[in-house]
Length: 279
Image (cartoon, rainbow, N blue to C red; front, top):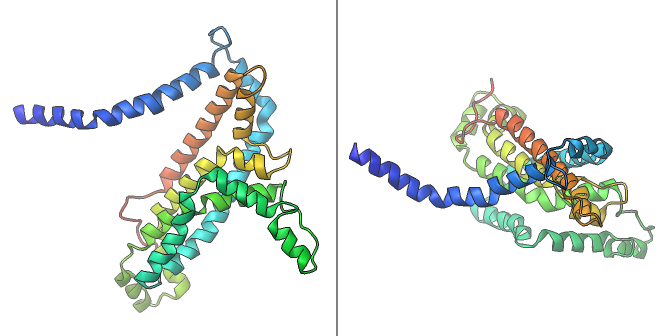
């Protein structure tokens, strides 16, 4: 009995920093956001901040559409890339992983600013096109630029979890599938794809969450009609009226979207060891 008490006290002591961190930087900030979302300037309970959000349904849907499109493009690029890297020699895999992780060392704002400078009307890309006889292309201030900027910044977060899971697949499983008559396509569909399911779900979450809440990319690379939820929240906070209640209500909607998305995705995820082989 004493040993159990010592173990519980020791576990509580070891986990105390985590609980304190979660309380200070997760629970309390979320509680503050919800408080402002459901109160007026005098601290009285109200639903007017929530009902006001019907005026912002277009940016909310736009944020969902942009983030889903960026996540899908990242998945379409990351999955075959990870498959090819896994088939390389170990030394080549290390070099490929280095080039994937290298952009993550640079701040997102700096990367987005440099990318917008390259794609600007007078940027290096358009200057090169003019030099070889092509006209300038409208690479900036449109929907495509915003989605491209999101893919450019968040693609490594899709590649790494997929590669991590895919690299742990035993070669004997692929050999057994080939011996049983599976073609290359069937081997990917029936063996590799189910086993990499957890990595796919992790990658989708890691790309979708920052994409749906982004604001600098859309403000820097998009046009006036490409504002997203993050832009609205920033605008409400920095407005002359400093409209914190509406900003908090928008933040609450953003948190709800992220929470629901993660719950849905987690229903499709499997354990860490990988999924079962499809028949």
